[in-house]
Length: 329
Image (cartoon, rainbow, N blue to C red; front, side, top):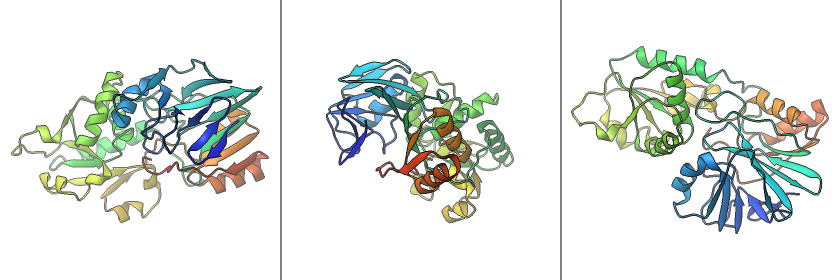
């Protein structure tokens, strides 16, 4: 039902591409991260709650049909529907049904609770195309609430200086603000300009988060001691950092599970928090989908494919795509 073309994964029955990596006439989009949503397509279909972020990233004037989770629609000879992927606001698995067969493209997904987006939904299918970003047994996540409690302890353990927590601007920053609010905090958090822009779309979608203000909105003379600041990794050691005097720094990412990653990046502290499925989440998803055939994209696809074949008896193989899988983990 789905074939690989130079433009991306193509469904002939729907006459549409899935997360195409080149401009195409019709694009079905799993979510708005840059390796899945590319500009220049003629018409987009995506889940409705992510419309604001998608237009922010691809342009306000794109031709976009927003579709609610679980609402099937027909494209030529295929039935299409979007189902929650639990990755970021508006992230979706794409279900395609034609000629008595069901395929699902997972996009990026996670199984852990996240107060900033809809939880993952198991979708039964004959063939599953799954991501494999963290497909090694060393990757096993703790809950977002536990990590948020650790972050609060780190931040409030030294109120004599600013605490800069680096994280990806779309998805991770908003999840952190939602996880901290779920702990009962009310204190304002300062933001670099990159996450601040995305936060506006989350607030329009009524995602509960801590109050925020851009660092740039504060007078230059105002002390930032004791404040928690969220910033993208690109701001680390940039001129933007001159505003802060001897801040403590940390990075929140799934890659912090690997000893040495924090040292190489020069952060004082690492918090293991990812918006992708861990090893157990990937195995659980494949089994619960009931898929008899599985294709695996980006990350450790070879390792997971071999495990599924040898240990679970499932026909599994890597599928080469341009999905990066590590850009916003």
